[in-house]
Length: 348
Image 1 (tube, rainbow, N blue to C red):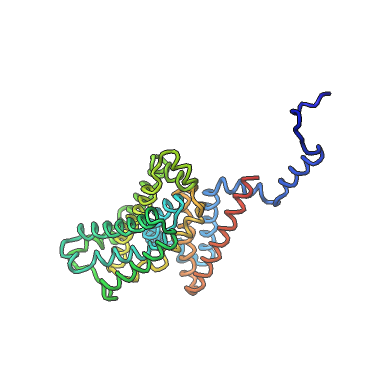
Image 2: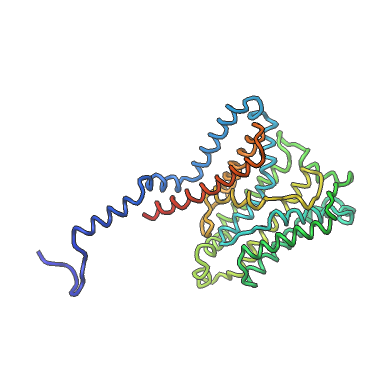
C-alpha cells in the first residue's frame, strides 16, 4: 500500500487525529442542544412567552387574562417596540445607540411647545419625526465621519438631548391642548378593540421587517455589521450607510415620541427614561449579536414582548420596581451568556 502524501508533507500520527476530533466534540455536553436552540431562537422565545402566560394565569388569574390587561401590554410594548425596531438596525449594523430615550423625550417636548401646538396636530407629529431624525443624523455623523466610538457618541447625545429637553420645557410637563386631541385619539380610539397606536407599532414592525429582509438596504446592513472592510471592498459606502442607520433609529424615536404623547397627553423631559436599556435588552434577547451582522426584527419584537410581559407580571403581583430592574439585569446577563454558548456550539 503506497503513501498518497506529497513529498515532504507531514501528517500527525493516526491516533492523534481522532483524539483531536473527540476533544472538539466534548467541549460542553449541551453544545448540540444549544446549537439547535440557537437555530430555532424564535420558537424558544414563543415558548418562553407561553410559560410566562401560564405564570400569569397561576399568580394573577383574575387580572392577567383580561382584555384590558392584554391591551395594556400591547400599548406599553408599542412605544418601546418602535424604538426597538430602529435599535435592531443599528446593532445589526455593528453599532449601538444609547440616546434613544433622550431623543424621544426631546422630540416630545419640542412637539408640545405652545409655538408648535399652535400649528395643529399634523405639524406636531412632523416636528417630532424631524427632531428625532435630525438627532439620529447627528449620531450617525459623529460615528461615521467623526470616527467616534458609537458608545461615546450616543452617550454624549443622550446627555445633550436630555439637557436640551429640560431647557426647552423649563423642567415642566407640557400638556397637549384641547384643540390637538387628534394626537391623544391615537391612544383612545380603538379599532377591533385595539388602540390606533398598536396598529402604528405593527406597521413600523412590518416596514422594518420588509426593509431588513427584502431590500438591498437590509443586505448592506448585515454586510456592514458582519465585516465592514469586506463591505467596503464590495463597493458599499460604509460611512454613509452607518449614518443612515442612526438616522433610521432617530426616525423611530420620533414616531415613539408621538405614541408617548398620545398615551400620556404630555411632552416631558422625563419621557423615555431607561428606554435605551429596554430596547437593547429586547434586541439581545431576540438573538441579535452585539458585534453585529446577525439578527431579525421578529426576534427583537419577541424579546420585547418577553420583557413587557415580565414587567406586567411584576405589577400585577405588587412587586417593587427595584425587583423588576434586578430581574431585567439578570435576564440580560443570562441572554448574553446563552448567546455565546449557542455560537460556540454552532461553530463546533
